[in-house]
Length: 369
Image 1 (cartoon, rainbow, N blue to C red):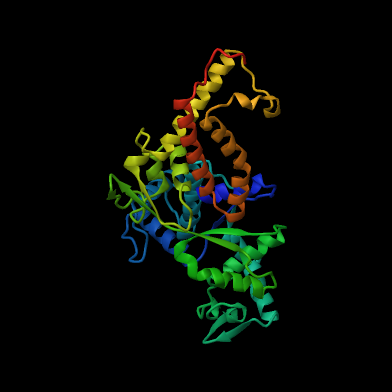
Image 2 (image 1 turned 90 degrees about the horizontal axis):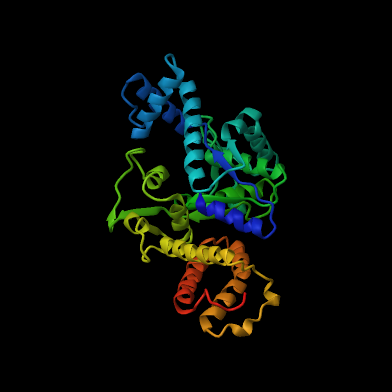
């Protein structure tokens, strides 16, 4: 999420009008399993064999009972559970500065008939067919290795079918280019979605899909075990219980999405120059101290064109200015490449240059301002 938000910031810096949207999978078989698991915890019954067993479900059931009381149905449990998860997501993501303009419900696509419209349109364009009781997309006509199922033999639509309706809706709302952030485990579905959008009449390569690798957590070199909250993975809230939000966000941004990332909690919480985030924060603190002292002395900044740069005799002084001058190009390139880690690397590199300058050059002197 931090990477997607940073990419949005980069694109906005280059003049793009950016809309941030979270797509909620709030319908289908997985939601039914989740609702059944939540209701079982609420009733004190055994969780279904294929249900959700994390401690977070127990905590949610307790909150649901306190809020709704008795007599909750499976449908109501699913609705309440989705709302509670969104609330938690908003809070956790907000702590690292990630906010969405819209939380879009997949359920809405079914209720409005968008999914049915997609199926009718694909049929009218001659790119779908029936086989073995299921409806298929001729995705091989658009470069996919094999045709894909749109509607299963039991009548349930697939993720692909629903995703096509969602992306079609976004383009109908006036957006000109879509960027999805997916986990690397979904890499096999990228071409299927793009093929489906092309089958609907959109240009090839839409949406642009950026795949992110899973993050491996360690503490002092030892792998961090499963989250007590989820029972399946380490939750963002678990990390934020130990790590400052600013540290957490920058740590996520230090490596590219296409690179497997290992975060050692012992390192990122350590206040030493070995911690790359602390290294940057310490440079910022030194800069803020200089600015404060300059303000106290009545020094005001003047436009660079009015400054006599000949007084800068040390290479480290000139090096700082050259690095700053290069920054706009770094931002533009990072936006074009969808690579916010380039900014994080620039910031870390600039902090190192500044530390060298600070140690080797007198900042506060008796010279006339």
